[in-house]
Image (cartoon, rainbow, N blue to C red):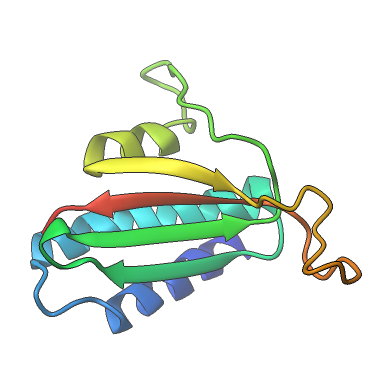
Length: 128
């Protein structure tokens, strides 16, 4: 499921890429979207969503939401380690990044029954 999700996310990114942005930014965005979506599928759980927004001269904003409230961890990894570099990539390749948590701790929307599990959105902004 994870490789398929990353591929679907890259195609979505390419379909919604802003024409005013450079192809170098698109290459970085592909890598970051793959990493964010893979982590959301592996560690965050459903529902996983992706949003891509052109923010003019400020670049492109990429946001991936998942069903977990666990904060992504910027880890120190050994040179030979096979994983654990995802947040480091986001930190290194984006102009800025952050995490926003669903403000509804019980997942309720407007007093209704829970519709979506509370979670988080990890976002990053790439310069053009």
